[in-house]
Amino acid sequence: MGDPWEVAEEHFYPWNTIEMVPDSPVRLPLVGYGSLMNRSSALRTLSEQSVSSARPVLVMGARRVYEYVMSPRGRKIYGDQVAEERFGVLNARASEDSNEWFNGIQYQLNATDIMALADRESAYDLVPAWTIPWGVKNSAPQIGYFLSCRTETHEGRQLLDSQLLPHPNYHAICEEGCRDVSSDFLKAFRRSTWVREARVSDVAETLARDATTPPPASQL
Image (tube, rainbow, N blue to C red; front, side, top):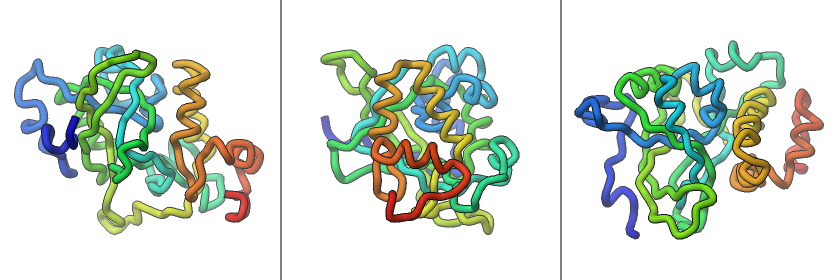
């Protein structure tokens, strides 16, 4: 199968939309792995046509982790009345372990979608990865892109903090989007999402119980 970057280019922020989709029929296959998995949240940014193209997939050779610091705009949307440690938003990175994976919702984006997404997702690069359809056996892998923040700061704002915990309202939106696919898809989300070096599936009850008070680091 080979490495995805051998057959597809990375796109560094700020993205060059013309390079990514040079002709109007061309679409960019983007995998949303956080709030973009939620249809209502996706419609805040993407066109109805693009959202209607949604399909669940698995992204191979990558890890999803709570480490992105929620932006001021995000705090207005999801609420700022939580402990400072709970402003965590999801990020994803290519992994050296080809057996790592996470699930998400793939959309086919046009140029207008991409420009709107650039306003929503600051300082994320677009990284290629192999994807396979969720629940489809013996399907050939296809290239898809996921958002990956790999810089510590942007325009004076801290972007990454490995000790963050999920913002409870943001996390609920992510889980709602997964639940709309299936209960197994939600379980896969929890199993393939990391927070403070633990899988969410292992600490889900703690996170839910202490939604406004961060649990001790020893519990995560």
